[in-house]
Image (cartoon, rainbow, N blue to C red):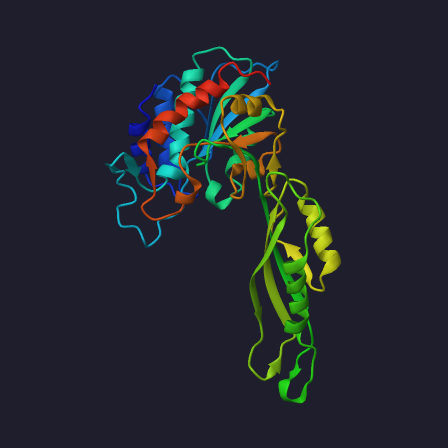
Length: 347
């Protein structure tokens, strides 16, 4: 197999903040070409097939992302120095998700040498951290229909069989302005408080076995211009984390039926995902003793309208933190495990 530690350190050394992944995409395109792959590109997304496409076989996509968040002010190291210390590789993106990029790449190159009952394609996407429209959506538009995807994100090589979706709602409640001293007007804050109380107390009846209930949190609220004027407008923001039991439209319909304010979704793109417990890949993982769980964090799965799972080296708790790292043993174990799970898979 390729030297995943060396490749990881090379990737960490190349900045690739979301929408600025060009240099890293250039490097991975060269690396894959040097390892016998025919690489195709759309924007800063790359993909390569293990063998010529066969329309009689299903398509299996291995996917992870090349972009990172920007380093925060708490870093005590150079985020792009990629230091190897005490059995760990430090650096921005080392854990989220360059460890998955190099492990899936190593597994792909190994599986490429063996005939499979599926069309294997490696897709490295961009803009994942900002859910950009020129990321995995653009990549998927270049591919034939995908039957199943393995998405590389830091899960400790446990299997996420479901992932929460996201919808952000902007609420606006209208009242009527007036002088506070004369008890005039219709206070928009008081009206908005009733909406906020509903979001706090309401529970959607369908509860996912792996993701639990839909979660709604009012996270921002604003109103008023000065102390003696009754406000005629109050706005609030609601963070909605969906389970796989509800669509965005269903949740939005219920919200609009219950609250007084005007509610507008910022986006309805980021869907919850889930995979059947009897899917062949899930069964293979269970036989290998790999724990399954439901993930509360978003990934490119949210933009995949086909069965997918999330599994990769590293820990989600290290993502977006100062002095981010991945352990060497985590990286060394990941690619062989991917190969063991995928080699000979029939689905």
